Length: 411
Image 1: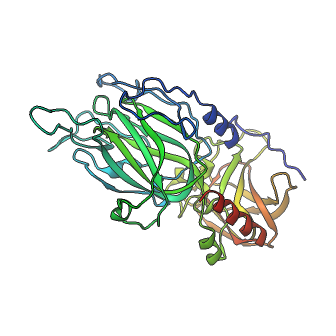
Image 2: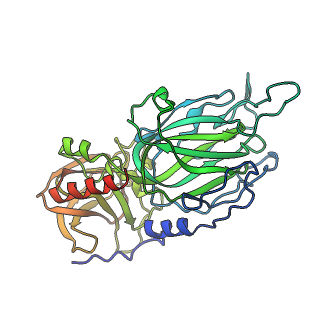
């Protein structure tokens, strides 16, 4: 039977968000005069923030922050530390450490915090560059600082945010970004080898201070590492790399049994009834939840409906074991849950797990009959939340072949 999925809180699905990102504003005005010509087929600047922000004048430091439209909802941050991402090297981090680039959450500003090297900033900040001599005191046009970023999982990049929050007069004049494919365990010297082939993702483009500088990327290619450059120096608070996970089919084949819906394996949240307190994507993150808002929690219902999440598996597979975890949801866990599956985007939903009672702060485990499926839906009753969902099983022969073919096309 077809499920009614109209009970949602007006949150657009991934397709709608991707369409907005693709259309964008495509405003490329105000580019650095020293920048290379922009290849609009590779990326589109979705913001045109340039120049300084006003000095901090007290009160809420985000009051005058320049924000981008929310264009990347439903996409994975491939540079999420929880997936294993890291900033593995930088040529300079004199004022602030490179690792801050990938810290979850917005950058924090403390106007009174100073250290031995100066103002302590929540981001990556390099020293001021100087020219080569008394006669040439300014840096050369091509001078820059760089950082190497390992993505948490291989993926296709759809959007980039270079966030300069709180860097009001000490942000870079422009930035660029390149990407490559290498072993996830590659050392910095491996990536800095002259023989490594880098693909330009964002050509040198002007950015603004204290702003969320956003870019849509139009490359159908799988990447594992990035090289971020800032010209000539300065500070960047956060780097977000939104896209779609592209797992290694060979690795999954050797595992045989794995979590078919895990974000790190290519599982996706397609839609949900709503995301009032926390996003449904949390339910497929690695590891157990560490606190209440690390799972998915809905608002309190005052009607006779219920809440749900719809997932797309990495590919067609057969689920044999299910884990529903309510860790840290002690007075607000879902009361009951059921699972349904379907094969194909338009297939009929069929029961996988009948409605079962859930306990607070508990891992619940169930064995189920393996049936080929591409999508799963969890329904919780009447409201509340779960922290994690694990769907252990194997790809079907058809699913494995399609995943291998798709990976070959973007490699």
